[in-house]
Image (cartoon, rainbow, N blue to C red; front, side):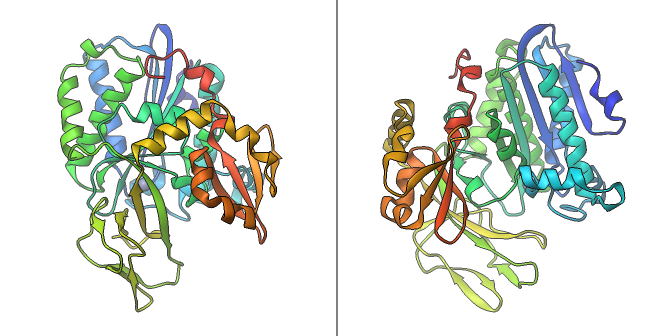
Length: 395
Ligand SMILES: [Zn+2]
């Protein structure tokens, strides 16, 4: 692979290392949100150490800077959130714009998009995409993934909680875009924005990912066990799977403030006052855990509520997907293929209510767009490139 830093002509590339063998390709993103510098710092530190210690590499490793202008300014974004633009429709619109119409984030997107397609064109799989973020509130470190089995299996190796199904509530995160093309993609939220622990957790996560993907040998990474223990302790030995059950949206003109003191994964009881929204109290709908409460001025999500997924449900859903029960769903009344190749289903409202969301979730479906009478359900399994990963030790 040619040197991408020379090719892109800016500081998009934090690092690039190409090993001698045909191994995995790992791509780490840092700073997709400009007020979250921990990820790029961590990526930079790990690249330095690999080079200094001349650790042998199997395959290729890339570190990519996200929103460069916003990182320099210390803002979450300049014109709009770079992590909400990654849908086919929005990308087409951006590509069609005249140069002088491009917003800062449009330019950032086009440049990252180019780098991604260069990597996919020239490198071989299996690919691992890892995106580093931090949160405005205190939190245990955690993983967010789209619910495909390849993502679940790889994520399970890390001793931190795993939150499924964020794509049902957010439009256009980078990882969903990559995931829709079938590749393994994992988001890691390492802690609070400015905490040093967030950098350390991302560093630990990166070493683990490099070893688990077989890009580096475990014996070559000094302190591997300590990195594992650091993540485990930081996550307070919580390695459970969670799913999102509620998102509290806020409009751009709304007045919203969380009550102080909430951390992600804190358990809240039904009726607990969580926030004030346009001078009205916002209560917890049911006993659940609070997730990503907003303690910064920019953002469209006030908070989320999550609940732990029972082990039995996880196991059952894996089995049902493997025997391809989902392929039979269009037999049901009110269910038809929207796009068989992409695995998307059109489900009428009444059927969806009757069959209930949990069944579709279990089978790997997530609902996204809703017109009046129909829900579009997309499957993470139909597009997942499982074969690409079937030779790995963790699959
Ligand atoms: Zn972020």
